[in-house]
Image 1 (cartoon, chains in turn orange, brown):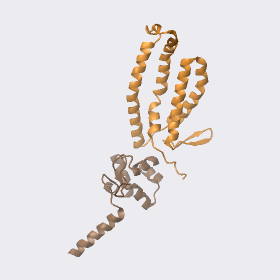
Image 2 (cartoon, chains in turn red, orange):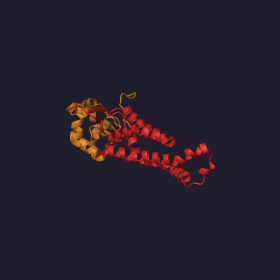
Image 3 (cartoon, rainbow over the protein chains, first blue to last red):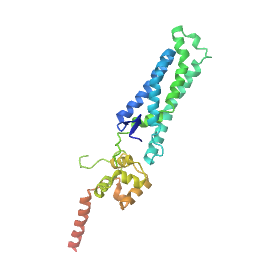
Image 4 (cartoon, rainbow over the protein chains, first blue to last red):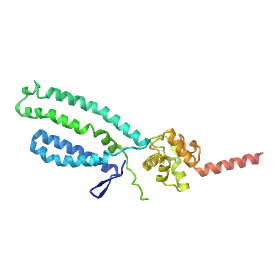
Length: 157
Length: 99
């Protein structure tokens, strides 16, 4: 795993677990804010797309290259993270798909709700889909970033 | 450190002498990592006992130091090297004297 991010000429150390956890929290908070914005109105979603893009850029830029071509420990950690992530995702995916199928546009249930809730219920399936799209590919890397202990900076040769 | 002054083996449950062997030979983690083909972070994890190496890696490390694998890794705490070396010499002397 890299111990730093090189961003626009800046060398940002990511050796401490606290910083890596902060990156994970930033990404998922930005994703949650954007989904909430989308569900509440298009303007909010447009405003919140920028923090989401920045968070995604940082997350993918750092975690995406995480353990490419790693050694046996790194491969083991990555495999374990994927196993944990997709085992857990099953518990999110199935209720998510259930919500989409029940509250989808063709649902018979939506018209039964009162008007104030109806609008939320109409956009909820899209919110669930976006949440799944945002979480599914990033969860294994998020687990690695969250659990990997403090790393040592590579000494200058 | 526990009550006996022995470093607990970490998550792997394996004790090792990598840090001692590295220090006495003046080898950096990067050098050792390069020689056995792993990330330098992995050497740190091994030294702390947070990662149990594969059989292949354990043998590679032992071969690098020119020692049998049981001299580098153990499931039981190692005696200090000084005690082990001088203790065995003392035993040999005692045996010789008794003859």
